[in-house]
Image (spheres, rainbow, N blue to C red):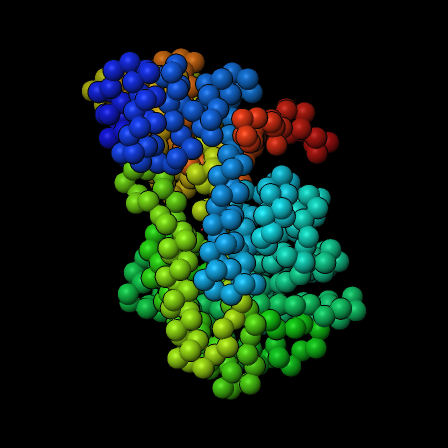
Length: 462
Ligand SMILES: *Cc1c(COP(=O)(O)O)cnc(C)c1O
């Protein structure tokens, strides 16, 4: 994973050589996973121009650093490419479940993109950040009556409805509140993005959406069109996450545009919006390929335009819902090394001051990550050890068998690409406070989420 970078690292001479190499050598840069990473003259890892060791000292650990420039760069790649290749009113919606806090909704607002929210809690956070909720899409397969009321009351522009019962509930509540709610219907296209060549019936079995294959999607459209307090704007699908190629999206588009043609034929209804969901991948390790998001969007758009022509369907406004690909490589997490445990003849463990409480993804999915010894970037990586969290669970591991210089107490350990689904999934297990989140922007660093205190954690306890 990070091995070949580390090997190069080991081979190089003085710290200044490394810095020069990083600047001059494109190959080296590539091995840094993302172009916001580098090594400075002290042999420290830098992120978005900041010395990570200094940041760890200044703010304490565990610490999440975010790169505002990178977040904005990704927003604008999606926004500009979608407007250019689909239609001028096409738009990305930031899938805010990936990382939801006030400041990021301010970024989304100023980048002129929409958001996807999955709970009243996310809507509330966006509302408090001053996000224009007309551009919000309310997702979820289990919206409660209170949440529906809350969302309508706060002027959420669009619901993405997941079932006929939900459409009926939204219709009833919108009626009570004297309004008409715009909605999309979530359709299951029946694609397994990992084996997308066999357009399988596998994902007909999903807790999300309504399937085309069973005929239920048509029933859903027919019933929805009869209701008067919901206005059907279009359709939504989401095929999965961490998808590297563009063709599963093109396959989904093909099925959805075919569905639009059939709906038009049967009911005379033609949608203005087609939402293709999220799921584009990011690089977690060197083994992952680099991704050209604009090229992917362009390639999907070619398929969409030609299918609309072929099927005699009016080109809809396209929405996409990137979450991971907006924030993942805009984030890294810093920890302080604890104790080194060498189990003779078996394995080495280095403990850290965080773990599954701030990053449960290895515990949940054995997710690969690149781990670096941030304060000793120029030393040889000849020591294999497993990075273990602090919780009372053997499964609390951040990464297994990492090659690094032999770590010692108080070293700074950096885990890369942690912006998405890390802090968002943080818990208070073992009563560990959630880390601080610091934003890096134009050479400045400032706290966007304060480190939790013990008092914060017990504030609701009587
Ligand atoms: C999770 C999710 C997304 C975001 O997926 P990413 O892989 O993070 O881009 C978008 N839309 C829906 C409906 C989702 O459930």
